[in-house]
Image (cartoon, rainbow, N blue to C red; front, side):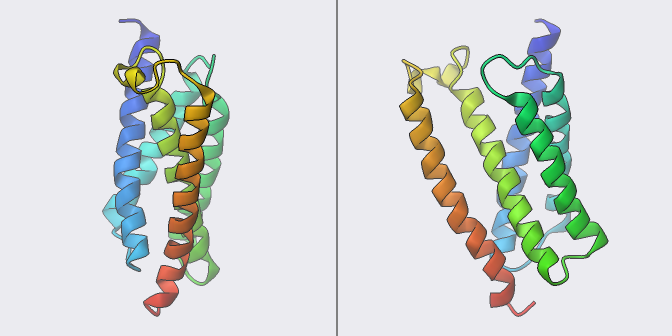
Length: 159
């Protein structure tokens, strides 16, 4: 196993952790509450995956660009949460940032899963761009709706 394979494995594991904890954070945002431990694990795993992603060779998937974007959006979420304590519009900024981070993490997970060397490659045997594009559009629509609900979740619960 080469060092690139180890980095890729750790990258995928951190991304999967980010997706799991991010789903939990988004669920709590939809209900109008936030579990601090889940948010911490979510942001840490996203930042770990992003930093590792910067060291990966980028041939087919724009890993470096997504990793840098995730670092910036995570920084915005941390700023909204820790410095401004989700007061006023900072709650909406945190909810939007969380949704964007989770959306990009899910896209990374799908891209990693559909790579030719992945065991999930059989789901798309010809590695067609239309299949990947369709899944991205469906996920984008889903996350757009969830983001709107998460932003409105705070107002719904009177916080």
